[in-house]
Image (cartoon, rainbow, N blue to C red):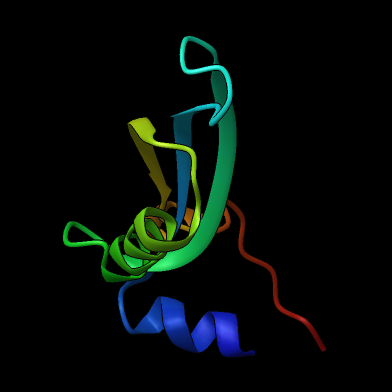
Length: 87
């Protein structure tokens, strides 16, 4: 239920693809996928993670690609095309 509460507070599922240089082989890139609920467009949770990465992880970040998913959307609800009386 915590996920639904976050979504009602405008948090959305964010997926970040992080490309980074391997510490010992600087010409090679490695990919890391990070997924979390975050606020768009400022992404405070992602910024916290990237700050942690800069402080604690040796691999220098090359690029970050972000995708977001609105889990609760108006398209999730539709009216039925027929009407019946239930007794």
